Length: 136
Length: 136
DNA sequence: AATCTTCTTTAGAATAATTATAAACAACGA
DNA sequence: TCGTTGTTTATAATTATTCTAAAGAAGATT
Image 1 (cartoon, helix red, strand yellow):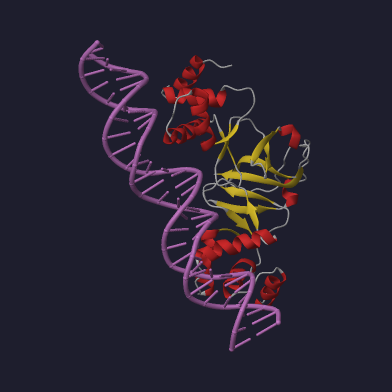
Image 2 (cartoon, chains in turn blue, purple, brown, red; image 1 turned 90 degrees about the vertical axis):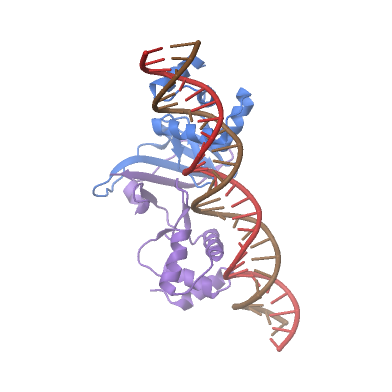
């Protein structure tokens, strides 16, 4: 359980004004035990449900992008019409249940170390993502 | 170099009528040495350039989806506003140059075997994809 | 507290990729 | 050649996302 006060501090420290909307979004995103995978639309609906207050869709987009930029959210590369985000920003990978359109975390240890044996001159590796698609 | 006749046969064997449009698309997609990464829009423009004949955008979508369904094209999971496809349908992975928005093949050997140490009851693994993002 | 500046929210418009529609057309089998 | 079925096409519809510009709220300054 994280208190509203902590979100306010975290926002201030990130040079983001602690507005009512952002705090509500924090509550929905970060006030949970387990990692959370979502699309903008999921989040938009959850805010209304969980906090009782409506936040405009544009603000949800703005805030998610701001949080992503600050490194509080991770974007998950997946083939879907919608963009998926993850509150777990540590180094880890994903199962994607194609039928259910649902993501499941894989710990780094569940996958093992990945050694890339090729390099491109002038470029360095920014991230390595493993996506394991699941079927029935 | 693959001949038009071979494309016609391949299409017929796949229960796809060998139309002028589909043959042109085959020429652009499969008449090359190296693997080819593309978006629908890339392909749409290339057809006009390479064959001199125009194919409607809707047909490009239809055909790419048909070829994908038949297993002649692979969809690459990536976060982009456009969907990327690959003519290399063998088991392999990718670099993605974020700045240039360009994909580069990684042979399976370049990455090494990936052992997934976790399983989900009732589900089996359909594919394992590694995406290595590159930055300058 | 009043004022000023800057950042944020918002509704709605704009954009862009993709999918759906339905009429014209082309391939195939009889 | 004719009838059937599959295909192409322009265009409209849909959907996710971004843009815009005006109203509102937060923070700093007095």
